Length: 621
Image (tube, rainbow, N blue to C red; front, side):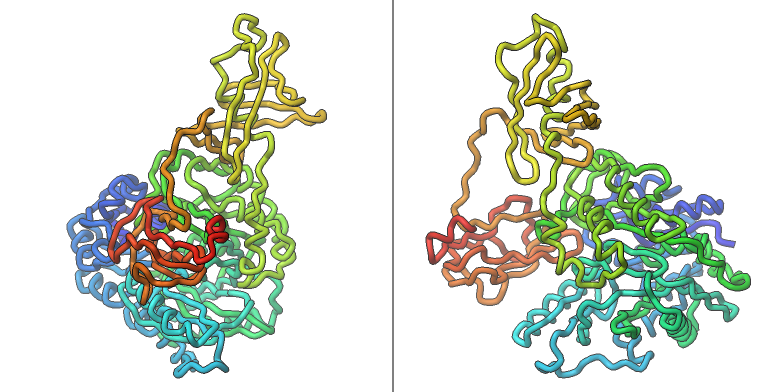
């Protein structure tokens, strides 16, 4: 019997595994980097062991240190979570060689399937060799790992070398393995996968399908189970292929077989020899705890009978600290509050007051809704996200709500090109026009009293806020009868709650302020000083770091004095396990280059200056 489990991971998945272990009466052990010293998974484990450093290569990718941590803490089993070393056969062997139980598939199965190139060969599929014009577009893909890292779509032969270089660098950083391969890129297919679970007694379950087509940067954003709109024959084929893949490598434990579905056919992509981020939707539909089943399989128990019947539909949305309107730029800062309405499952690695740093993935949480039908589940999740309380950095919450309500998604006609087609419309600002007034009235609470004649200022009160990239000025008056504000009737106002009425319709606004950030329901504003302070001015064409991170590399031939074209990549920043390209804003001369590989930069750091060839273009920069 397993008595103590070390989770060789961090954040949300570590907290998720701990939850099941506590229910089962199993002690929990966390490992943590210096950046995660106060992280939720570190705080909630029964014991925690430090991995010195912050970089993944020095901490969560150090299998030798993790095995030592398990022994030191008295753990008798290791759960790898997902990402990091979860598909590393060498780590699995090191765990078992140390006399510990590995909660995952045999190392031989990992070796056969963890490399996407070897997995395709096992399934009779050969990757592309020499790429020609006729093969385009192609996808450069990391052989190890997942999560969308180490992947690049190449549409021109001239871009292939750059795509290979970028994918190798990102894969090496994320997985410690820079191997990549090239395969045909299927445009606008659906990403469908099958959850499998196998025991050591020869039983393999196929626990239905999941659709994960809504993706950004090849990383899933919204997932659901079962995959909608599949024919019975196609579903049967998907299940059969998944079971065949598992049996081919004598698989045990939880795993996922992924496919791209196009023109009614299933194209094998890969097998992930681990638990998936989106496993909660399968748990909701089948009424199982996949982590609990992983533990039972690791203890040698057999799966009992056939898989349980599927019931209803489940949808999951990944909440990221990122700005989709700014090329998905990750965001950092304090998460003051995160809460969703009752009835929604929220898996997270953060608690109120935690800081979101720069070292790891920007996912804050996964919100999951389950209902008898797909339409009900989608509606429930969209409504819950809209009402969620999220006080902190910019998130993709609005994008998720709009995506779930988009006609292409509600009618189940989505594919992997969804955001390529619709991102601009989905990220158009649509703030509540009364939010600045509500913020101003809440801020004024306590400094003036309704109806107090001696407290009635003789001049209108003025507040300024930035909202959705624009400045808004709010004016209101205190009178003997209360507060007047441009025809809006103020029914109530205090520091946390404002009730306004317009055209006979009453609306309630919940207000919270953290520094100069003001959250009014789902709208976020920035309080501005009444009179603008002088600010540091930058030369036209200045490129400022959009996020804190590390300069990974400078583009070939980019030096001070060089001529660059608008849109040309100049350098790459790595932040939150993703690479972000910094491009020339205009065509002109690179007047300054302040960045060097390995340099740590903060938000707003001056990276480079491009002087436009045509002065009229300076404003566009």
